[in-house]
Amino acid sequence: MIIQAPKGTKDLLPTESYKWQYIENKFRNIASTYGCREIRTPIFEYTELFQRGVGETTDVVQKEMYTFNDKGGRSITLKAEGTAPSVRAFIESGLHAEAQPTKLFYFTPVFRYENVQKGRLRQHHQLGIEVFGSNEASMDAEVISLAMRVYEEFGVKNLTLNINNIGCPECRKKYNEALKEYLNSNLDNLCETCKTRFNKNPMRILDCKEKKCKEIVKDAPVIIDYVCDDCKNHFEQLKMYLSALGIEYNVDPLIVRGLDYYSKTVFEIINNDITVCGGGRYDYLIKEIGGPEMPAVGFGMGIERLIMTLEENGIEIPKPNYMDLYIGSMGDAGKVEAFKLANKLRIEGIKCDCDHMDKKVKAQMRYANKLEAAYTIVLGDSELENREANLKRMSDGEQISINIDKIHDIVKIIKG
Image (tube, rainbow, N blue to C red; front, side, top):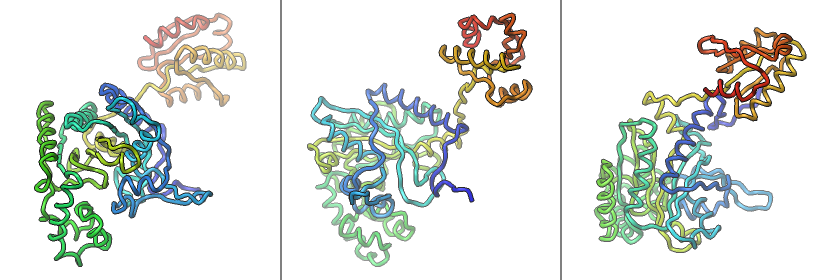
């Protein structure tokens, strides 16, 4: 019996990998225009990082993390999200002591034990932005505009931006009291997880996916009515900066996001009723993890969900040119010459291949078609003797006579 990939994982084959490369390159280019630089963090961290950073009452920590003890007895967790590891690296490397803000971007696999669904796997992948050091609402707006631009650059038009302000810890104290008072009469009807959240972190109940809990909280008080003047002013500033950029938005008082570290701004980008990006401000996470008191804001975006969104919007990612030239051969001498020529052309940046299966010429040409080679040539005794061959353009069959020793002439023709 063949060993299969674990449930919730997926092989990325060459027929799909070009889409990821295209997305990564485009995102890297967009992020660089905002002054962001790439960070790469380990695939696993000490479990405490996510418990302290993400929050013990979140679904991620309570239900979804891949956690195990290593051979030294240390509790290790596969990366459950991208922000906490970035913050840990930011502190540990001393970047927090440099001039701010620090703008980072990343691509990373994320591991969560959850129900497998379209666009979300147990190992899925995220791209993200993290900006440290600025508490200005203009930075929130910049991060949001970057996220919106990613989808717009791919040609997705029908985007909805929803924003909310969930206040600071002082705001939430007052709000939690009002929320608990509202929920108290329905406490017995909450799911078992939300019953444990009632005293520890009642706001997490608003994010529960259980149908009965969603029904209970639909008329709950909203936190935006309880935020302090400072948080309220920050939110008004955010709206001003978004308007300055011409970005339309809706205020959705029910957005709280699924992670405990958020404060003040939270946002979601929606396409066809599906959340395709989410993020916000997390001004207390750096201190919580062991660094100085320093504000931050960012977002995460699932790559699988981005690809799914493009497909649903009829947007095709252009396929690259995989093969410039296939060099066919006849006889042993022709095979050696093809091997040598392929190596010379590769050094000049030409994507080319030759026969390694001892196929007949017709079979070699069928393989060239499979590779979608832009050009082909065949080297046999006559071509070796005359040092000339016919370079065939596969799109229209036109043949161009070439000297096989004049590498730069061949390169010039192929590159156009």
